[in-house]
Structure formats: structure tokens, C-alpha cells
Amino acid sequence: MVEVQSQSLDTISALPQDTIEKILTHMPIQDALRTSILSRKWRHCWKGMPKLVFDDKYLNTSSCSREIRKYKFVTAIFHVLMLHNGPILEFSISINPDTKIVDEIDQIILYLSQSKNIKKFTFKIWSNDIMGLFIFEDYKLPSVFFSLQGLEHIHLTRCVIELPLTFNGFIMLRSLNLCDVNITGKTLQQLLTNCPILEEFILIVCQDITSTPRTKSTFLELSKCLSSVQVLKIAKYYIKQYAEDDSMQQKLPTLLVHLRILFLDVCFLKQDELSYALSVISSSPNLEKIKIEIDIKYKVCGEETRNDLLDLQDYSGINLDHLEELEITNFGNYDPEMEFLKLIVAKSPVLKKARIKLNSDVSMDKENKMLRDLLRLTFPRASLGVDIIVER
Image (cartoon, rainbow, N blue to C red; front, side, top):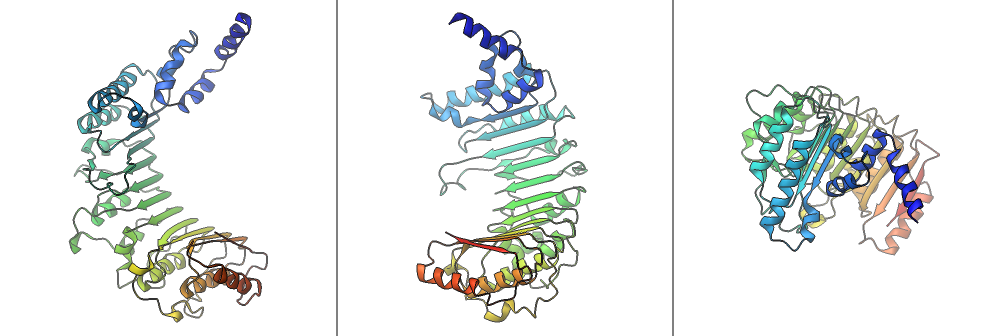
């Protein structure tokens, strides 16, 4: 038995340094620290981990008081940072809304700003209480955060974003994920303008700090900052602000020629939102994948859209020669939804798959009727080989 254990430890010790670091980065930080007891070689390996992930969820299982859990969490972070002796390429911190460590996070970001190595920064405030999500005060990013010029990926949740006057942009940034952040339309436009090589932009449930019309930015203005974006996701309530722009046309003034993947959250029973979605699609000639999540709260969407809104003749200019995949979730089998499906299928000559996920409220009779209509080829299809999948 002793010999077997010795052989096992020798195998662990013989692992290459880069393999050890990859193993450690897939562990919770507290478990990574414990690996120092495995062998002499592993004793200091955690000090060179290029990816640091701190999540206070594991502390909630402790019987300690909130203040003690907070102290342990903060102490662990600073302990790792002070003893770390390698480049930190990725840094992620996730906290509970009631873990109030604003000053400590400011210090952490200040520490990270002293190095030019960091490529990815993630900050999340998580909550198991969905209804209480907006009770807690959001975290305001310190001005020093915007000096992290080497960042290539940013993922922010529940943050207040105000750009300092000295902001020179994130010239290396490739992906920007903003979830439930407080930011004005003007500030968002300024931020995107100063990210010249941005490839992926995700905007979910954003709140405007001030709701005055002067600070709002329409999608027509925002689209001018997205010329290099390849992946675009705009979801939840922020889309409604952009959809309210009366000047939306069938095409945006700036074509999104690099856009390959598009995710939108739309209420098909509101004419302005549907027009918005079609404008974005019409302005993206090189799309390869479209994913639409339909807003299922039809009662708050307003009156049903005119049935002729999606007349194929009205949108004959749509060019989807590269579209291979279409996915629509929460499909309720309303007329505007079916007309949208017909339009996309009719304009996509290389479409391989159209996946339709039905809303749970759709009855079996409606589902059967829909399947019969699809099987009868009652509408034109540019791609005869398209696989239309309907599922709940």
C-alpha cells in the first residue's frame, strides 16, 4: 500500500509545470492552495497560476458570521496576490451582493493596474434572489480600471461605468460583456468608439444611469461603433430603448459586414421591436447564425403587429447568402413569428438547420398544425436541404 502511494505521488510530481498550472486553474482557489502539500514540486506551483478565480459562494456554506466570511475571503485574495510570482493573465471575482468589499476591490484593481500582463478581467455580483437583484448598490468601477490597456476580454455584472476624462480606450479589447450595468447611452457609445478591434459585444439588461432623452443613444448611433464586431448579443430590456427610435429604416446607415453571429431578444407583437430586429439583420449580409429569443410576455408587448409587416416584398433586399443556422426560442406560433420564419428561410440559400423551440403555452393542436404546414412546403425555401426541427 505504501509503495502504491509512493508511485502515485511520483507520477504527480513528474507532471510538466504547464500541465500542473492548467490543473490548478480548473480548481476553486482554496483547493489549489491545498495542493501545496502533495509534494515539494507542487508546494509553490499555485504561485505561478496565470488564471486567478475568486468566488465567495463556497463561503456561504460556512457556519461563520458574515463578517468572518468576508474577512476570510478578502484575506485569501490578498494572500494569493502578495505571494504570486508569475504573470496574472486572467482575474475573476464573483461576490454576493451583501459581501460589501468595495474598498478592497478598488485596491485589487489598483494592484492589477501595476502590471501590463492581465488580458481578461471578470467581475460578477451574483444573487440567488432574482426578485431582490436590484436592491443592492452596484459597484462603481474606479478610474484606475480604465488604465488596464492590455485587456482583451472584459465581463462586467452589476457595475456603474463612468469613463474618466483621461480614458484613451481599450485598444487591445476583443470581447466586451456587459450584464445589468449602469451606463448612459452616451458613455456606452464613447466606450465602444475607443475599442477599435472589438469582435464580440454582449449587452444584457442594461440600465441607464439617467433617463433623460439627452443621454440616450439610439441603435442607429450605436451601430456606427460596431463595424468590426463579429458576435453581437443585445438582450432583455435595453433593446426596447433602441427600438423606440422612430427613424429605424430597413437598413442601418452602417453595414455590419463583419457580423457572423447575432443574438436578439425581441417581442414579435411590437412593431418597433420587430422592425429593429429586421433592420439589424438586413444590415448584416455575412451572418452565419441567428438566434432569436422571443419575449414571452405578450400581454405587455402591446397590440399584435400588422399581419402584412413581414411581407416578403417589403424585405426583398435582405441578403442572407451565408446563413447556415437559425434558432428561435419561446416560439408561440403567432402570425408575425411564422412570417419571420418564412422570410428567413426564403432568403437563406445555404441554410442547414432551423431549430424552433416552442413556448410551453403552445397546445398540441397548434403544434400539430404547425408541423403539417412546415411539411407541406407551403412557403418558398431557398435551401432545399434545410433541416427544420421543432421541439419543446
